[in-house]
Amino acid sequence: MDETLILLKSLLNGMYANNFNGLKDVNKGLEIGKMWEKLILDLCDGYFFYEQIENFNEPFLEASRQFDDGRDLSDYDFHNDGFSPPYDDINKRKLAYRLRFIASMYERGLENIFDRDMKDHWEALYEMTDKYTDGWLSSARSFLEQCSSGTEDPILRLDTSNHISSDGNKLHHINVLVTSGSLIPSLAKCLLFRLDKLINHVDVYSSWEVGKLQCFKWIKERFSGPNVKFCVIGDGWEECRAAEGMRWPFVKIDLRPSGSHRFPGLTLKTLGYYFSVVYGHSSAEETEE
Image 1 (cartoon, one colour):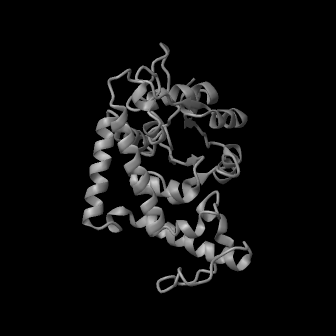
Image 2: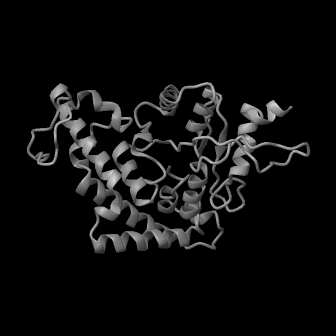
Image 3: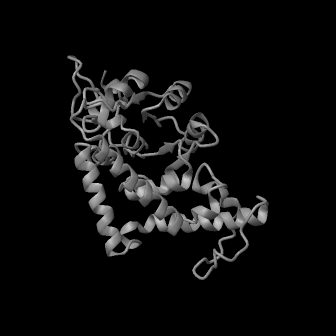
């Protein structure tokens, strides 16, 4: 997510602005980054019990499901239930309650959580950031929308002159997020950066403690099948090495304005070439041939 679908670290350390050789105001980027940091922390602490559970990082929300007895949480007192170390079965159940509650908040969306003033501040910050980054946030969301539309095979067909043809096979596409950040702030970022309608809460994985390769293995097991294909999009070495280990195509995002893979700019057409290199042409084309 970070430095791929959203920009935060590169705003705070000036890297994003410095890539523009003086055309971007570094201090403006720093100011925007700090406002996002505060908003993320306020959401985590105010609604996601982060002060209570930051030391109990799970790789995904369903990781504690086996300890959840399904109790009705509508009148549950999260602040006085004695949740604390050690990490025994009793506290694992209390953690599972909190993760289930967070999942329900995620499904509600910030439009139904924030009051009018907070909503106005959030929307203004998003628009300010999108303008400063030349549409990075909105174009990344648009790209995810295209990826999850399910109308075409991402392994786009190539004609005899090596051009992509427009007719593809209808498939079901799923956006899965694997982030090196801890789980709860990552879910908060998904909400704040308007990714929650494109990435389900059960499809968010934190590699903070287990590493990206382990997360990729879990994802492959979860979405097993003869016709399932994967592609990794990211900016770091760890996801690149993990993708190589899984023999999945990897698209590296580049912050530089002259970079070939960035937002705006990355398209399904580009993604199709990466798929075809690893997986070959679509089955429809092979049948015709």
